[in-house]
Every structure is written in C-alpha cells, then in structure tokens.
Length: 91
Image (cartoon, rainbow, N blue to C red; front, top):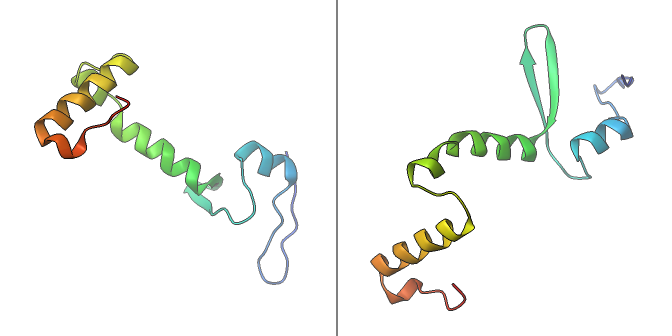
C-alpha cells in the first residue's frame, strides 16, 4: 500500500513502487477507471494493449494458427493473393 498527498491543484506524485509496477515512465498517460467506489490507476498504453489482445482472442484458432510457422504461411498466402508488390524477400 502506498500513500500520496494531493496538492492544491489536485496533483499527486505516483510513488516509485507503483510507477515501477505499472511500467510508468515520464510522459506516459495514466488511465483512471471507476469500479464501484474504487478508482483503478493503470498505464494507458498497457491497457490499450490488453484490450487489443482481448479483441483478438480466439482469432488465431479460427484461422488455424498454432505457431510462428503458421503465421509466416498465412502472410505468404495473403501476399500471393495480393501480388508481387507485397512480396517479402526474407519470408
């Protein structure tokens, strides 16, 4: 548990232990989410990544993707459909 004091302008300093735990660095945006009578503080970038992961959950299974080789195969198939313009020399 950490404690922070609110200034007259409504500002607080996030304790270093919390910044480290959330991976917050200078310039990062912080997201405040209300859940009942609590407010959850999170790194906005991390939250966006988690939301994206949730949105894509299950998509790999739908396409039969089980590993990196399956991803490479799918990329090659899509590029072949779209033509030489998208060909990757290292794939």
